[in-house]
Image 1 (cartoon, rainbow, N blue to C red):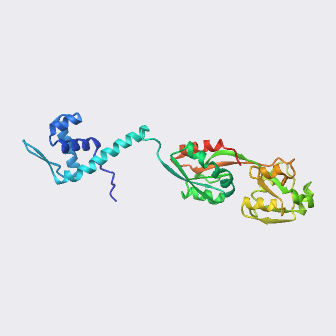
Image 2 (image 1 turned 135 degrees about the vertical axis):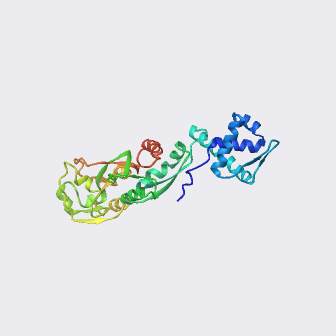
Image 3 (image 1 turned 30 degrees about the vertical axis):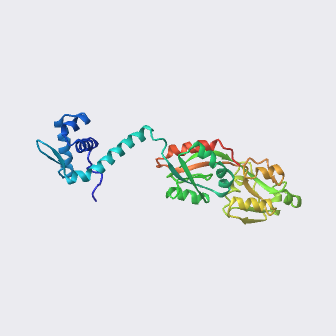
Length: 302
């Protein structure tokens, strides 16, 4: 396949051609570009050889453009204008470039923290338009890798060598139950777990693992297990008194303050994680992601 950019006319030759077409006088055109008439003629000849067309009919009395020259002139002017814009853009004279970013997040964090932050992000980064996508951790990572979305916020530990992450906030977890449930079925020690239902996202227990794997945690044997698929669903079930579960502290802060939920076995130092803005390692917009992350870091989790 032919490389369309492999043999392009240089800008200096195009400028000489445009001035020659404007003045129809090589001496006047040469003064406009700061060359001798002979040097300008050499530029025009080089352009003709490169394009394999005749651009001017020259006699001792006049210069006339050919049909090829008339066809080339509008495109040559556009090329010179585009080159000037390139120089302005590189110097920052055109202002920040408008960027559209598709940002993924899980439902709970997106609704409680990210969506209320959109106006702050818009003020801090007016050239960036954010489009949100909601999904689970594995789904978000896959879509970032396949470039279906540009970046995502996730607290999953990254195992994909193609992805990298910028830390945003620490995420702490608590094992909790509704006060209404505890009034009927106390949970004062590890032996009480048998009388309760453990609620988690799925059977692999991704949330309970923050308790189970803590260095000072004793094994807990629950009476039964219930999968609810999302953190928001777990919170709803636990708040209604239908089980106990591990939940992010920021998400249930108001429930704890009101007494609706109670932290269980507080003597255990549970594991924690970090929210990260994840992106492809080879993405050229990493400076943009870092700027967004700095604004997000200043916004408290809620």
